[in-house]
Amino acid sequence: MHSDTASRTATRPLSIAIAALGGQGGGVLAEWLVSVAELHGWSAQSTSVPGVAQRTGTTVYYLELSPPVPAGGRKPVMALMPVPGDVDVVVAAELMEAGRTVVRGLVTPARTTLVASTHRVYGITEKSAMGNGIADSNAVLAALHSQAKRLICFDMEAAADETRSVISSVLFGAIAGSAALPFPRALYEKAITDSGVAIKSNLAGFAAGFDRAIKTAAVVGLVPPANAPTTVLGRELDERVKREFPAHLHGLLVEGVKRMLDYQDGDYARRYLDRVATVRDYDREISAGHDYALTAAVARYLALWMSYEDTIRVADLKTRATRFSRFRNEVKAANDQIVYVTEFMHPRYVEVCETLPAGLGNWLLNSPRIERLVAPLFKRGRQIRTAHLGGFLMLHLVSGMRRWRRCTLRYRLEEQRIDAWLERVKSMATGQRRYDVALEIAECQRLVKGYSDTHARGLRNFNQLMRVVDSSPQRTDLADVLKRLRTAALADEEGKKLAATLSELNLATS
Figure 1 (tube, rainbow, N blue to C red):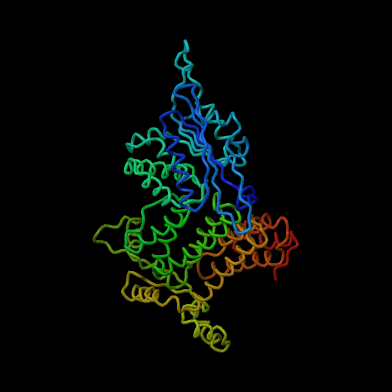
Figure 2: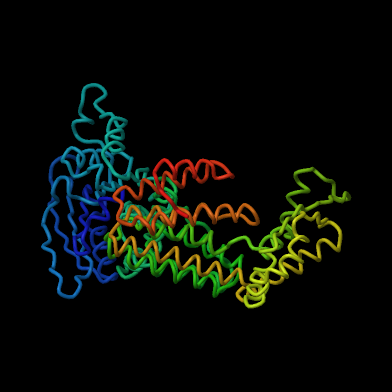
């Protein structure tokens, strides 16, 4: 999926072919797409060839969109007609027209995202047949599934009727949600608004197409769009996501923002978006930004890493009202019954030190004498009854330390680890030009999770894999090696499978 994307140069135009019947708004759709590209600072060219045969005639609109040419770069030469095997996006406003684009060779498994409506507009030969002359739609659908790299296919005519819009606006939304073009959702909506025609209904059709495309044929691993945060700050961050990031990433990023707000605060959420934006920028440069696979992976795993489970987070989660309600529902407790909850907690000495201010925590960790005296107190786990006032207040006070989290040693350490991880991703993607390896490095964050011993084991395994990256950056099979090692690391808690795999591959990480 990514090798083709990564091989593109930044100035190669994106090619789009639109097949629409008369009256389906193919010309308007082409104009909207040109407008979006120009609003994004790209160059655009649009041509069309009208048809006059079956039904009301099929017109093929062809667009090429080109990113800005860097200083000293060569401007692309844009074509006037689609070339079989070299079209990035094919749009068909009716099922049989989608089938015809396949027959013409415009849809290929290695490159083409196909956006098509499943509804039928019957041809003259179908209507005039003595018997049942209707072509087999299932055969066409099978061909679409087998030939397209990604297929977004549903009844867009029905969606247009439901929103009292036109099919072109639904197609426009489906294109935005397809991950095929690197433009933010806000620019698509602005193109509709700037056109000044049936703005309200066209925006409704666009939203319907966008949501359906994301939910039914989203890029693997992405998150469908959900409700935006309801606070003023949340809405502000939601608008930033829509303004600055490709449309198909919005659901994933909004969930990340929500997680950051729940974990810390607005500044923390902004830092999250700033970091993702940096990856987005170089992802766009090295891969022409067709699907932003690297940006998506970093956005997902960065959200998980930045919400690491320190003692503050654990205490917060264990004292939430929703947690007690869930317990009551699970045991089917009556309103007048008391449900007692006993928490088994085993914070290690190192975790206690990391919860302290960075200077003090670091001093304690590097004081062998104090560790010998204090560490034995944390070798045994603790049972805390949160249904009792004392136990609840203890955890509630720890969770209240969230406001001082940025002063803790753990925060300092995690920031260093995150920055080192992101730097490895960037170095591999931009320096070594190894997009597949950069993706695997991003995926390796899956190893770092949980708290206490679980976190320690995961971090140890993660560091082992990163040492493999640092010691063998030129290895041609590095992406496959990392994937294999990551799978082995997740196989057992003791790390036996990982150790065996490292030995088998003759990799020393110590």
